[in-house]
Amino acid sequence: MSLRMEQLAGRARWTWSVGTLSGIETRVHWSVGLFALYLALSAAWSGGGAMSAGLAVCALGLVLGFVWLHELGHALMARHYGIGTRSITLSPLGGLASLSSLPRTPKQELHVALAGPLVNVALFVFALMVGQVVGREVGVAAVLIDVAIWSNAMLALFNLLPVFPMDGGRVMRAWLERSRGRLRATEITATVGGYLALALGIWALATGRLMTVMIAAFVWRLGRVELAHVRARAGAPTGRSFRSGVGAPVGAWTDQSARPPRAGGVAVDIPHIERPRGGS
Image (cartoon, rainbow, N blue to C red; front, side, top):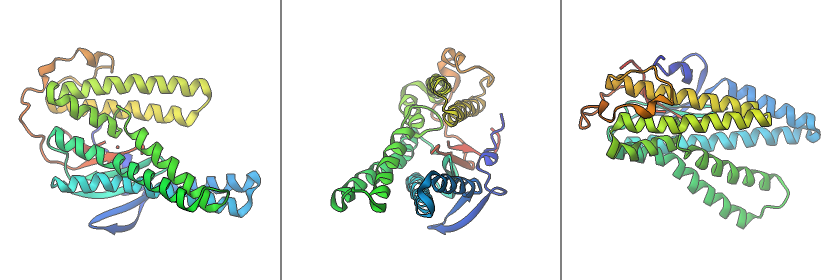
C-alpha cells in the first residue's frame, strides 16, 4: 500500500481553504457541501419545510465545529512537543490534521492522541451545563444543545475505541510500546482493531446499516496501512493478514531507543492517523 496519504486527505484537488488560525490552515472537503444539501433536502421533504432544512444544516455546521476543535486539540498538544500542523481538513467522515512530523516517544503519542477526545469531554460537560441553565424544552436552542451533547459524547467515545486510526488505537499502542516495542505494540493493536472492525461490519450488514459497513471497512483498511508502515520502517514483512500479526517476533524493531526520522504526517479521525507522507 502507498504511504502517501494525500489521496485520502484530498488537500490539493478536493478541498477549499476557509481560513488560517495560529498558522494552521483549515480546509473543507467538497463532499461537505453535498452532504449539507442532502440533509437540507431530506429535512424539507420530511414535512419540516425551510426551517427544518436550515436547522439540519446548522446542526451539521455545529458538529463540524466540534470535530475541528477536536483536531485543534491534537494540533496544540503536538505543538507543545515541537511538532507543527500544516492544516486541518474537514469532511463528512470527520477531521484530519496534517502534522509536520510524528510524535517521537510513546509519551508524546499518548498525550497527542488523548488531547482530541479530552476536548470533546470538556465540550460535553459545557453543553450539559448550558442545557441546565437554558433548559432543553422544544425549540431551536434545545435541538442545538442536544446536538452538542450527543455529538461530543459520540466523538469522545468513538475515537477512544482501541482501533487504528482512532485515538484509542494510538493510546493502546503507546501503552503497549513501553514493554513490547513499537512493532509488536502496533501488531497487537492492529489485530484487536481488525477483529472489532470485522464484528462491526457483520453487525452492520445484519441490520442494514450500509454507512456503518463502509466505516468498518475504512477502519480495517487504515489499520492495515498503519501496520504496513511500521513494519516497513522495522524492515519486517508487510503482507500478512491481521490474524498472522499475533505471531510476529517481539524483537523485530531492534533499536527501541532509535527515534523515527522526521517526516510529514497526517492525523485522521473518523472523526485520527499520523503517518509520514513519503515512503519508509
